[in-house]
Image (cartoon, rainbow, N blue to C red; front, side, top):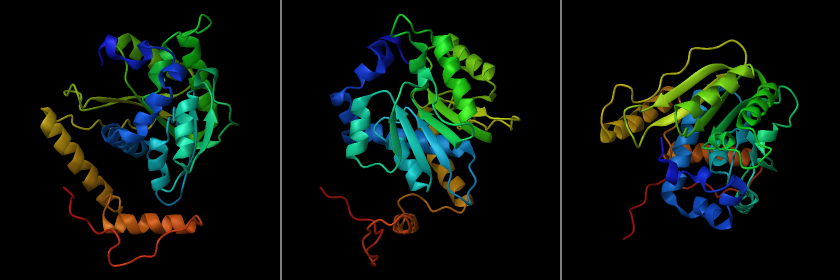
Length: 281
């Protein structure tokens, strides 16, 4: 859990903290993009979506659309909600494939019952634990968010919310309000013994509770071993599912075919398609 002085939510409300300058980082900082993509990939894995059809998903706190990019790559349709106009402006400039909505999720999820097949959220839910205005009550805002999210999800769907809890009390507050709203499930912690790689995923079920997925890196000690195991495990799992390894030629060809089916202009396939190029110095 991050130190209090460095946490973004302590520097101001999200719509002000994520101004134009901060939003630009999400398109120019390669490390930030890599982390967001990895967490989105893990969140989608925990959703346990069917592989034979595309799903309609909600992205809470979608920001500049980095997590939405991964959803599109997997063939899913999505709607993103965010409170920061600057972040959504960047998403529109990037021409993300999902629909975008400027909204405060602490006021609820304004969709009809059973609209979505699943929900992901990357690094957003902990912002609801702060009272940025005199009228804000964190327990009430969390409950409104979770109760309306529960209604918006289809029966049997899941919500996977990656978050950075400040302390155990905040973690308990979030999980308590989720269960109070009707969800079952619990917290999945990846790499619990690593200070840097440790990640919290609140895995929530609509309806009867399934077996809670196991966190990654539970048998690993040391940061280097954790990172290595994460990479190998992800590759094996994707191969086991029959999916192509990311950035491989097959992966590139599948992505191009998907874009053609969507009616988009795609370059013709050649013998050079998907070829790994030497690094330039």
